[in-house]
Amino acid sequence: MIRLRKRGFGLAATLAAMALAACARGEQTSQSADSTARNLTLAPTESTAAMKDVPAPATAPAKAAPAAKAPVKQPAPKPAPPAPLMLTAGTHISLAAGDTITTRSAKPGDAFTATVSNDVKDPAGRVVIPVGAAVSGTITTAEPAPNPSSAGTLELAVTSVTVRGASYAIDASVTAMDTIMKGRGVTKADAAKVAGGAVAGALVGKLLGKNTKGAVIGGAAGAAAGAAAARASRDIDIVIPKGAAISLTLNKPLTVKRT
Image (cartoon, rainbow, N blue to C red):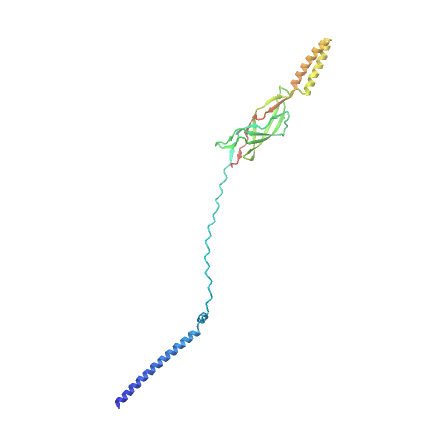
């Protein structure tokens, strides 16, 4: 009896332990289910959408990085213009007359031209005005000689020189020029003088000789005197032939650009 009771108590204890264990597992299962339900309930929208097998929105492809711009090539700086050339005051310039100039036709204010006959260089030996450069000027005085024993006047003034297509004002004096003196020949006035002398001579000869021979001699003598008077009073022109030399001297420095 006593053994049966002990076995009964032991069986009861075992059953009780098993029941407790079962209860414990049930509680754990219930807690796990509750936790799962809570997790499902609190799942975010994206998670719910994923769980419903809804495809996620396509993501835009990443934009490619912009290509690096090639460096802009800066233009090379322009070289500084060359320094101009300069002729000092006192520089001599040789010219050749472009055309004949004569006091017979020239008047003050008339223009004339000439060309440079030799390269004009600066103290460093650089050509400032090349041969052939054109020079312009005006005639300031043109007076023929009234007779062979008198001197006429022909004066020129230069105004500009053209170098490589550019014109430059020039301040220079004409120091020399090749001229010739040229008589104008027998003019109407000269013929009148000769004729007048012949008539006067004939009258004198007739009065002195009282015959035709005396008149002829007197006429010849009068004509000679009239011719001499014509020569003595005849104008003599100053002429600068074409190509004749004209010399200049600079009064002020002349600056010319280099190209």
